[in-house]
Each structure stands twice: as structure tokens, then as C-alpha cells.
Image (cartoon, rainbow, N blue to C red; front, side, top):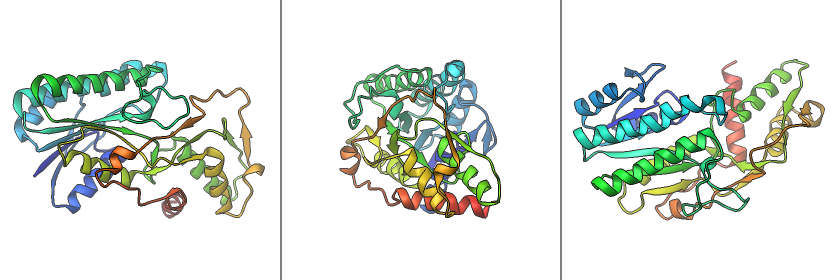
Length: 295
């Protein structure tokens, strides 16, 4: 069995690659930043050549720019939208039996604070969500028009020690560790009452694999259905170094959050046997301990 992973050097690509190798599956990673094949998913010639040469059993599209800022409009379009079309068309022409997984996001749905599921309406609320929505509609078109097996998983917040410090949770972990070592800096945060899920990336990729390994469900939200606040996360990190978070944070008074609560209804993904193994506190422990071991 052979698998292609576009965006293989990111958090999800790294975890999925490691998991599949434990199953003795051949994995070929493609990434702009290095891998088995160096290149961009936005390059149709490269994508077409790779698909034609390998004719994989599965293809996973994780490549993306992880920001909702409007100034990343074209970068998001290239990686997510164009990348999706490149993969789908290459598969249609060269390897129509390949199963394709497209990454979706909780941020592409209309969010009224209630649990989000597969039937929640899309909402083009940012340049990022526009690219995600386009990607999913492209996948649905190829599934319907060409009878291709195209899957989509809508990711809710998921973390690991591999998260970069541009993500708020890893930023918090890194600042807490510096404070533990004597730094007198302050941690600047927005609205710490915002609630979201804290899934473990290792659990998420196992859910992805279960999703693409069956032929009844083709789109599913991937989350644990439990929300915690940024304050909960920050407080637990500081308690692990025996300090009170209130002594070290500065709140941005003019900060406007993208949402107040972002949580999933994971009933459908659970119906195929997917359950979170790592809870909120275990995830924080893992991130804190791993960060410390790398200092």
C-alpha cells in the first residue's frame, strides 16, 4: 500500500506519516520545506507527475497557510484551492482509484456558539474560510461527476508539541517555560474567556485514517465535542510551574475574537469508532513536558 501526503512537514502530515509507518504502509511526503519530494501542491505539473508515477492508494492534502488574515488571500488560495484542484484532476486523469482526503476547518462553518456538525452551513467569513469552502465544493464535484472517492475532515483545534509558536497555545507554553527559567516577561493575550476544543493531533490522524478506510461516510467533523477556555489552558500551564497566571498576563483590551465558542458535535465520526485518547490535561502535560525536553 502506498500513500502520498502533501504538506508532509506540518503537524498533521508528520503525525499521519509516523502512524502509517507503524502499519507498514509506504509513505511519500511532499512539501515545500523538504521531504521525500520537494515542491508545492500549487504546481500542477509536479502534482500530476507524482500521482502518475506512484498511483497511490491514498492521497492526503494537508498543505495550507495557517492564518485567517486577508493579506494571505493568495497564499491560501494557492495552497488550499489550487492545490485541491491539482490533486483531484491529477487523480482523475492518472489514478482514478486513489482515495483522496481533503482537510477542512471548523472556521469555514457558520458559528452561533452551538456544536457544529456536517450539516451546519458554510460561512465565508475570511480569506481562509473561502479557500476551504472552495476546496470542499471541488471535492464534492469530483465525487459526484466522476464517482471518485473524495473524503473531507473538518478539523477543530488540535495541538501537539509540533505546533509552531505562531499558534496561541504553543506561544503560551513557550512563554511559561521562559518564565519558569527566570524571565520577567509578560504574556500578552486577547480574550481569555474564548472557548474551543483541545484535541491531540495524534488522535486526529487516527480518526482520519478510519474515515478513509471505509466507504459509507465521506465528510465528518473531527473533534472531541468538549470546549475549554484559553484561561483554562493558561492557568493549567502556570500551575505546572507553581505560579499564578494572573501575575504574568496582560489582556489586550481592544482585542476582538473571531468567536466566543467553537465546538463540534462529533457523533458521526464516533459512529465509525473514533474516540479521543488524550484529554485536555494530558495534552497540556504533553506539550509542556516535550517543550522542556527540547530546551
